[in-house]
Image (cartoon, rainbow, N blue to C red; front, top):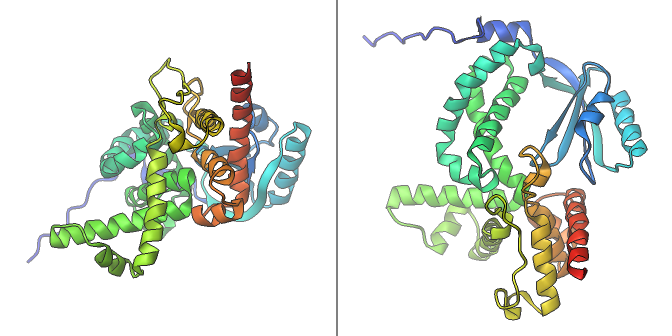
Length: 355
């Protein structure tokens, strides 16, 4: 006879079991307004203008604002956001209202429950994400910021977890963590290239496990169900993606250091073009680098890779925004938001150089 399965005692956080916490704050239907802006909103001021019970969150990776209210508020919240942004000289991009979003408001849970829950699932999540840590550090190099991001993911899972599905919270969190790590790359480099790279890496890893060697080009194409020509085209996209990741200026520099423009001896014209293009391209790279004075939870503290790609490839790469949008798997609107942010900093950089 097989041994009976051992049952684990329920986890208790802040004097409550998980089941008790979910029962006291069940997941409900909410209305939501999604939008982006051409420049960052003053969040504290914007939140203060919203009605009671309405929450405002910002997805730093995507630059996407979400305004959540009670069921039936979609139209009024949409109008309120439009009017507030217009009155404060902010242009909204891609604003849309959504009804019937199933969410829980973490703020409605007891603070001690949430604190203990994060203390428990934070280290558990970090351990599970060890195999993804190289990917995470491409976007979040600082250890403290990684811990903060994981805590935010735990709270995000709390907001989305539906206890009626019969799946334990820990299992739900584990499945979401892998998805959210992948979304970091999608937000920074575009959906298509990131998904292509992920698919190739999985196929290569499976082949190496079975054959103890890397696949040939033909073998990899067969594994992916592609022609060699398509594989080569996709490989160029992945190579471009990795090249962007390795741009030293976009990876940040030690605290207190300046983002210096290299002279033509460091960046010869045969590589970057004529002297003027060299100067402009390095000014663009510096404009898209992280602002070392910005807080970690601000967009300015992250490299503006999509803005760099949009400017560089449409200016010197001979591509239209429509072509680039299709290659990267992101919208032209999203590209414009990031390109506009780069333009504002670039103008300041060029004024400094002219001075």
